[in-house]
Length: 486
Ligand SMILES: Cc1cc2nc3c(=O)[nH]c(=O)nc-3n(C[C@H](O)[C@H](O)[C@H](O)COP(=O)(O)OP(=O)(O)OC[C@H]3O[C@@H](n4cnc5c(N)ncnc54)[C@H](O)[C@@H]3O)c2cc1C
Ligand SMILES: NC(=O)c1ccc[n+]([C@@H]2O[C@H](COP(=O)([O-])OP(=O)(O)OC[C@H]3O[C@@H](n4cnc5c(N)ncnc54)[C@H](O)[C@@H]3O)[C@@H](O)[C@H]2O)c1
Image (cartoon, rainbow, N blue to C red):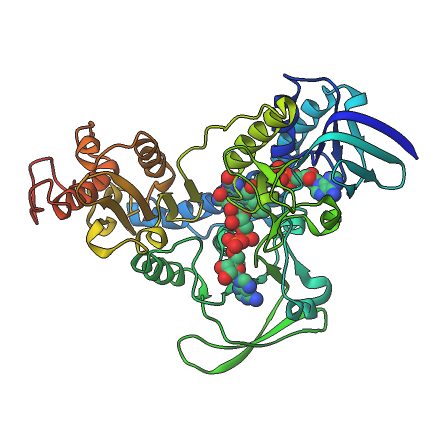
C-alpha cells in the first residue's frame, strides 16, 4: 500500500471534479485527482452531449415529416437508418469525450490517480487496495448514477439506462420508458420521433420538472399527441418473455388492463448521488437524508458536531441542482475553498435556470410555481401567454405551449417563470438574466422586442403580469399596436 500526503484530494474527475482541480491549483500543487471510472465525464459520455445528438436526429426526422404542411413534399416516405443515426451519435460523442480526455492528459501524471476512493476517516482515503491518501482537505465530486426500483429488474438484460442506450448499434422497434422526468422525456420523445414505438410510465403525476399545474397538464396533453404517456400509470406487471419485456398496465384512456411487449425497458427513474460506495459514514459528516449538510455558497460540509469540516461537496454528488453549469460552478467554488482553507470565501451562485430539450422545450427560471405557491396568495401575481396564438410561433408551426411568469406584488420584482413552448432554451436565458439582475417586470418591458419574434410572446406574458401587479394597463384582447400575432 502506497502512502501519499497531499493538501487537496478530489474524488471524481467529472465536470465538478475537473473544475475543482483547476481552482485548487491556484493555491497549491500538492493535489491528487482520483477517478474510479473511465475519464470523459458523464456529460460528454452518457449525458448532455449524446442525448442532444439523438435529439438532433429526431428533430431532423420530425421536420422532414412536417414539411408537407408547408407544401414541401419529400415524395414517398422518409427512411430512418437506425445504424446511421447511432453511428453519428457515437462519432460525435467520441469527439466530445476525446476533448475531455485531452484536458485530463494535460494534468501532471503525479496529480491523478486511478481507482475507487473510500473514506477511512475525515482526512484519509483508501484508493482500491493500492494507495492510502492523507489529505488536509477533500472535495467530493462523485456525481450521480441511475437508480430504479427492484420491480423493473424483472426485465433482466433488457433493462437499460442512459449508460447503455448511446452504445446501441441500431434503433430498436420498441421501448417502454419508466420515469417521465428529464431523462425519460428527452430520450423517449427522441426515440419516438425516430420511429421507435414508445410507451412512457410515471408515478405521482409529474411531467419533467414542471411544477405549475396548468403547464404540466398542457405538456401532458401535448406529449400524448406523439406517444403514450401516463404520468400516473398503474403498472401491474413487468416480466421477461422470450427475451422481450412484457408490461401489463391499465391503459390510460380505456381503463382496460393490457399487456404489451417491448424490445427494451429504459429506466429513467432518477439519479441519486454516488455517495453509498464512499463509506461516507467514516468521514464524520453531518448528514441529511443521506447527503452531507453543506453551505451552498462555500460548498463546505459540517462535521457531526456541527463544526466546519475540511471536506467540500460539488456537482451531482450534493443532489442540489444536478445540472452541468451548476456542477462546473460548484466545482470551482469547492476547489478554490479547498485550496485556500481555512480562509474560505462565498462563491457566486447564479439564478436558477433549467432547460429540457424536448419539443416543445421546457424551462424553469428563478422561483418556480412550487416556490411561489408557498407565499401568501396576495404577495404575488401570475402573467401568462398561450403560444397557440403567437404570431411567429404560428408562422413556424411551433404554436404550442404556455409560459407563466411570476412577480411580486408591491415591488413589481420578477420572481421566476415556468414554460413549455417554442424556443424555451432562449426565452429561459433572457428571463434568467433579468432575474439575476433583480429587475422589475416594468424594467423588463422597457427592453427592445423585435417583430415578429417568439420573444413577443414573452412580452405578452410580462404585460399580463404587470397588469396583475397593478403596475400597468389591463391587457387588450386583440391589440395590433405592435404588429399581427405579437
Ligand atoms: C442523459 C442525461 C442528459 C443530461 N443532459 C443535461 C443537459 O442537457 N444539460 C445539463 O445541464 N445537464 C444535463 N445532465 C446532467 C449533467 O450531465 C450532470 O449534472 C453533470 O454531468 C454532473 O457532473 P459531475 O461532475 O457532478 O458528475 P460526473 O461527471 O458524473 O463525475 C463524477 C465522477 O466521479 C467518479 N466517481 C464516483 N465515485 C467515485 C469514487 N468513489 N472514487 C473515485 N471516483 C468516483 C465517476 O466515475 C465520475 O467520473 C444530463 C444527465 C444525463 C444523465
Ligand atoms: N436537459 C437537462 O438539463 C437534463 C437532461 C437530463 C438530465 N438532467 C439532470 O439529470 C437529473 C436526473 O434526471 P432523471 O430524469 O433521471 O430524474 P428525474 O428526477 O428528473 O425524473 C425521474 C422521474 O421518474 C419518476 N419515477 C420514479 N420512480 C418511478 C417508478 N417506479 N415508475 C415510474 N416513474 C418513476 C419520477 O416521478 C420522475 O418523474 C435531472 O434532475 C436533471 O437535473 C438534466
